[in-house]
Image 1 (cartoon, rainbow, N blue to C red):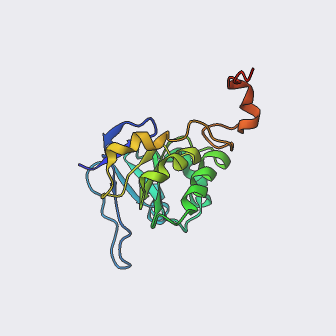
Image 2 (image 1 turned 180 degrees about the horizontal axis):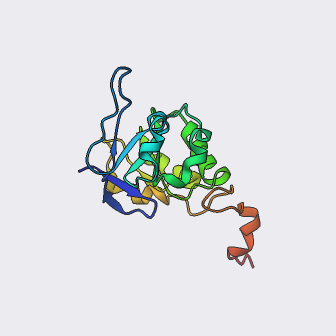
Image 3 (image 1 turned 90 degrees about the horizontal axis):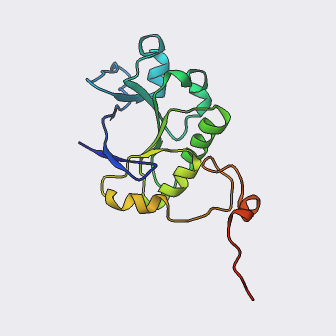
Length: 174
């Protein structure tokens, strides 16, 4: 069974199966157990899927979070696909889902997810990560907290460093 990394660094088995978009002449076939369906198919079959806690969605990098903004309370898990590591649109999607639309469910990064991206994904609001299969998942916990402090405000801390400066001890230079 595949594994994912949680925001706290724990590595757990991934019970959610990601379903690909069906071809134009095919229908969406749901497997047994929890699954992530493409957002467009979820919206198309909203009446059938609404309230099912074993069905979440995945958004592709070009899909805007506004697409599902009115249904967030019905989605236990939203995955954001990173089709290639250099496509940063998923970071904005995560931040919008958390800050503008108030999504409080699980937000997962899928696709071309690399170790050096994890801390930045965490700061944008992701709380689970499906690493690219060729990456060593045991290195992920260290990568989630590589930097001890961040200058900018983000979903994980809404105060920039200059507002938090009193929290840090000042070195005695005398």
